[in-house]
Image 1: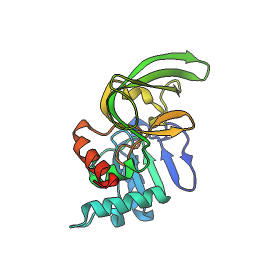
Image 2: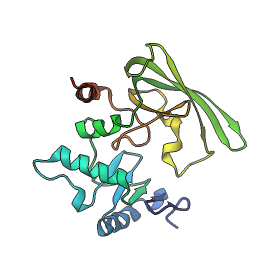
Image 3: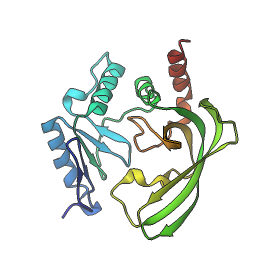
Length: 218
C-alpha cells in the first residue's frame, strides 16, 4: 500500500499521506487526477500549491488571478492535499499583496516575534505542549514588546498524517504572526501561502504595513 494512513476526506477535501518509498510513484497520478477534475493539490511540507490549468495566473493579471483563485479555494472547491510531493509546483508567494490582504482580512491580531516551545509532556492521548510567541512588535492588537503570548496544544505520538497539528515544528521560528480568537483563546492563523500557521517572513513587513494602511484609509 502507498498510504501511511487512511485518507481523511469530506465533500470538499481529500488528505493523502504517502509512504516515502512510494513518493516518486504516486504524486504524478494524484496530480493527473487533480488536473482532470479541476482540483488544487497542496504540499503542506513545502507550502506549495499545484494549480489546475484554469487557476494559473494569466499574463498581466498576476495578483488578480491569485486573489480570485484564493477566494474560490476558500469558498469551497475540492482540494487534494498530499504530504509527500516532489517536482515543480506553482508556489504562492507569501510576499504577494493579494495573499497578505486575504490573510489579514481574517486576522484579529498581528504581531512580530519568535515562537518558542517551552515543554511537551507525555500523556495517554499524546504529547501535551506549551509554548509562546515572544512579541517584539504589535501591528494589530494591544500587546507590548516583551509580552509572551502563550499557547497550549496536543500532538499525537509517532508520525502524524496531519502535518499542521505539529505545532512544535514552529519552534524558534521568527516572523509576522497572524492571530485569530476562538472564544477567549488566541490561535495561530495563516494565509493561503502559509496555511499551517507558519509566520509570514520578516521581509514581508512592508507589504503587511501597506495593506494595513490601505484598510485604514491611509
